[in-house]
Length: 86
Image 1 (tube, rainbow, N blue to C red):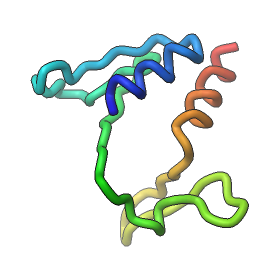
Image 2 (cartoon, rainbow, N blue to C red; image 1 turned 120 degrees about the vertical axis):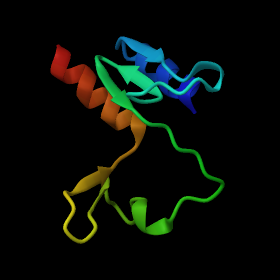
Image 3 (cartoon, rainbow, N blue to C red; image 1 turned 60 degrees about the vertical axis):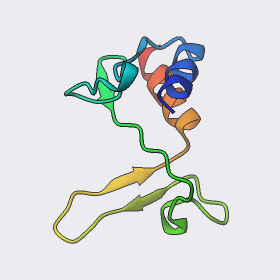
Image 4 (cartoon, rainbow, N blue to C red; image 1 turned 135 degrees about the vertical axis):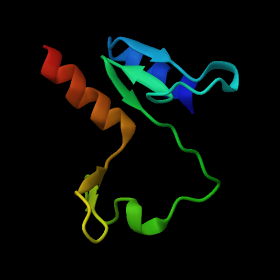
């Protein structure tokens, strides 16, 4: 998951590093993309409610007393970051 994320980011000409090499967990996150750290989570099955359906571009969600988050395809997110740099 980490290598795939870093590869995709580099394809969009973003600076990206795998910070979780050989199981040595980095204290800030698994990958670094343009100075921001992200965790990488891979599961055999992802809960259906967190994935876009119909014609949705993403899913906004939150738990009780939590801040909202958004679930969008990684490629779209990287494209947004790349566009901000231009």
